[in-house]
Length: 212
Image 1 (spheres, one colour):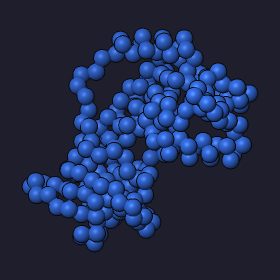
Image 2 (image 1 turned 90 degrees about the vertical axis):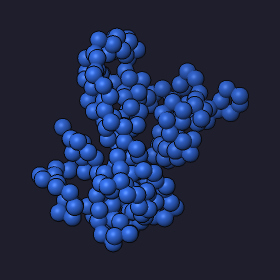
Image 3 (image 1 turned 30 degrees about the vertical axis):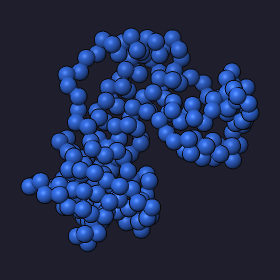
Image 4 (image 1 turned 45 degrees about the vertical axis):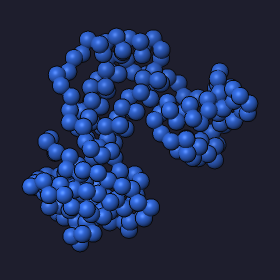
C-alpha cells in the first residue's frame, strides 16, 4: 500500500481542484479497476496498491525546465491555472533527486516581466451558459448570455468564441474585455466551431492537437 493515506481534501488542495472533483475521479478510477482503497479513522484517506503505481516520469532536469518555460507562455491565455497545475504534477512525479536539480537549474533562468493575466479562466470544460458583462472598443459595457464554443488564440489577444443570445449569432469575445462572468446551470446545445464563422481575422487557423 502507499506509505501514507491522503484525504480527499488534501488531494483537492494539492491539485487545486474541488473535493467533489477528487471524489468523482477516484470513483471513476475504481470503476475502471484501479485498486484505490479508503482507510477510515483520524489519519485515514485514500491509498493505492504500490504494485499498480506508475514509475517516476523519466525527464531530465533540463527537460523539466524546458517544460516550465513552455508552460509559462500560458500566462496570457485562459489556460494559465491549468498550466501551473500541470507543472506541479509533473515535478511531483519526477525522481526526487532530479526534481531538486530541476529546481536549482530553474533559479538560473530569469524572465523580464510577466505576461498578461486574463480576467477569466478556462470555461469550455464546464459546458454551461455564461452571463457576462462585456466592454466593446469604446468601453461600453453590455450584459449578455453566451454559449461557449471554443477559443482562438493570437499573439496579442485571446478570444472566447460563443453563440451570443443578445445578437443571435456567433461572436468572438476578447477575454481581456470580459469584465465579469457568472456560470449558470443551463447546459447549451452542441454547436460546432468553424473558422469561417468567426468575426475576427482568423487567417490560417490551425486546430490544436496533442500530438508532437
